Every structure is written in C-alpha cells, then in structure tokens.
Image (cartoon, rainbow, N blue to C red):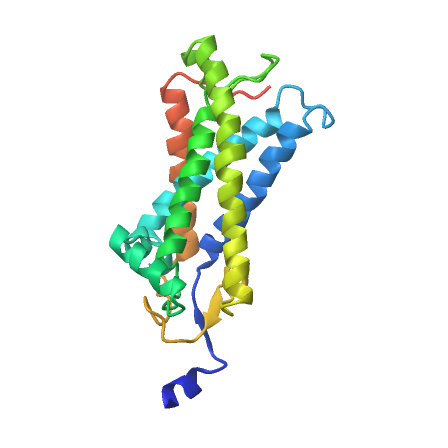
Length: 243
C-alpha cells in the first residue's frame, strides 16, 4: 500500500527515442507509400519514383528494427518481449477474465502483433522488389531477375498483402491500443510519444534500462540496415536507379 502511494503520480522510462522514432516514421512511410501510388498521376510521377524510393526506405527501416531488437535497450529487444505460445495463450485467457497483468513494454499479445506487422511490411516490400506496374513504366529494383509472369504475380501479391493483411493488422493494432487507453487506462499511445508510463508494479520490468550512447548505436544500425538492403540489391544484380 505504501509502495503504491509512493509510486502514484510518478512516471518511468518505457520506450527509448530511437524506438519511438522508428514507430512513427514507419507510420508515415506506410501512408506515404499509399499516397505515392494512388495519386502518382496527380503528382506527376508516372514512373513511381517516389513510391519506389519509399519502398526502399521501408525495407531499410524494417531491417533497422530487427537489428535494434538485438542491440537496443531492454523493452526494444525481442528476447525480452517475444514469448512462447503457452505464455501468449495464458495472457489472452487472463485478459478475457479481467485479470491480465500490466507490462511496461509489449504484453504477450502486443508482441505477437509487432512481429505480425513487421513480417507483413517486410513481405509486402519484398514482393515490391520484383513487381512492375500495370503500364510497365516502372519496376522494382529486382524485377529484371524474374520473368514477366513473375513480375505480374509479385505486383498482385504486393497489393494483396497491403490491402488484406497489412491494413487489417494496422486497423486492429490501432483499435486495440485505443481500447487499452480508454477502457484499461493504460496510456499506450501516449507512451509511444513521450517514452514514459506511470510507475506501477509491471510484470516485466519496473523501468526500462537504457543502453550506452543510444543515438550513436541507432545510427550505426541504420547504416548497417541500409548496407544490407541496398548492398543486397546490388549484389543480386538489381538496380538502385530511380527514373
């Protein structure tokens, strides 16, 4: 009781700045990807230069998150929040029973959503590397490595994953976060902006542990991610020329 009164009104670190920046940048890039394709003609971009550059940026960002999930701070590391199926089922049952524990970082179901979203974005971006547009005016950087039929199939799958996998997952993610914020009074959305949560006896950790020189480490991961994505495309014989 005394501990609860002492913690009341106090906040603790939950999310580091690079993780928060990644989250909102990915949101902006997904919106940008849709705008740059749907309104390409209105924007005077018939060859989808903006859209293709946007796609490369998304892939670099996804690889960055994978690296940050290894060398980043506590709440960002996959090893600390990705849990076994039994733990996910147990948390889901406790949630339905109204007795779910609170987590400073991702709860077991939230972690599952993170993995699903990252996988959907990566798969969609991967298909985009081999896709060509309807008028054959533009193609992904690796489209010449496969035949025309594969280009068309990749383009269809690229659109399918966006419309029927990524968008539903994103809508569910937003709805659940809003529900947690309004009903369970957990400021999940606010925490991804401020990086802090109210001090509570969380099930995972009382406060996030930071890493040394996080911005330098994050920048090094970004350089490595760009080298992996862009260097990988060139190594496979693709082109990074956007015109």
